[in-house]
Length: 231
Length: 380
Image (cartoon, rainbow over all chains, first blue to last red; front, top):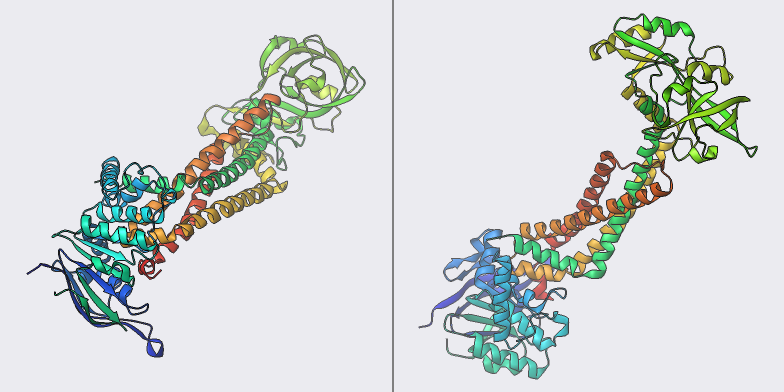
């Protein structure tokens, strides 16, 4: 039986009050396991991004709880929650959010720098991860000199550099063409996923479903079923 | 564990944005330069306004109560000198003459001069001589000319030069240097009190000031009381300088002008650096949001922004002070008595203004960064 990485129980999240109240999550329950690449798919406005934010400790639910490796993350105070994200979770954003004035290596080293590791040591480790994601020799370039796919690889290197247990990927192929998106997810599936890591991907790009271990479908704030996988 | 990495990150984000960093530095440099220059000019003017007090350098000055600055003396009768000499605590007291005269130059033009008449017996307050002997001041028609920026207005006289001073013959017997040049751009001549009073047409009373040396510093209060009882005022050197400065600050519009110029400089600096720094924050806002999602703590973000603002402010302050020093130095190469003086007060005023600019600029940025919700990074 695979070990549970994330467990969500009774998640409810709504925005606004009264007549303007909009429910984004309705009694969501899920478990994500180490060693799996869990996809959460669904149409726009179905609540995928809200769920991802709640699972990763960014958006507080109105009710329910999220256990990450037995820690109820929404019972942590703001500083501890930030520390928790920094140490346990890696993020790959849809728009990469790389700093254009920093080099590729400096961008990739940011989580280590935020962990207050030595600057040179952090850059050295980031360069190693850039080589792993296929960007050898690009460490000193600014992100604007890289293609979209390469920038996404830098974002992956940044997410991986602190060796998090959980990797959160928000629409990782939305800013990429089909082939590049496919190559990126293939790379993640082959090189980033392992038995001690859980990857949660939010996407509506059906072309990358083949890399999922499990796919959960979401609609109207509810998990409505699974398209693939047995867990 | 070190915070140096986070500060270095902030430094690189700031400095690598060359155009904004340059605009920030230029804005603060220019503002600091203006503030420093205006205050330096002002303090320089105040210093020059007190030139005679500084150069003569006696401990106590006795004067008419209505004297507002050293350059506007009111004549006192001779009995004041006698009365002061007989007061308790007075070691010695001598008269000083200070007035203006016209010198007729060789080319027929007239040049205004300041004439200082020193006590004939003691020559108290005499300047340091560069050429000649001090006793020659007693020679017939003897005058000592101060070699300052105004010296050339007397056609660069030397020992033996002669000219007409108020239709009297005057002979240069020495040249001297003084600590501070006067404010009004006219040459200064020293002679004896008696000759000054003889050469320059005067009202009934000729003593401009009585210079007093107390027996000890503890005697100053009782000397002041005795002089006041006589109907006059005794002021220490520092008090008289302050009174002269107050006159220029409050009664000539100089203080208001300085305040206006300083305020304008401050507004210029705040506008340029505040706007540029805020734009810098806005352009990176989403990335700061991404940092928050990744796990940076608010206090680290605030520290990073404060560091950026402080670094920019200090760099701009350094350049501004440097520019001000350079331009004053260049001006003084051309004009030795150029009335600008970089004081600790100027440096402190400039520093406080820059600190306020940095605080206001960073406050706006910090508020924006603290408000950004990392959820918005996901939401797009």
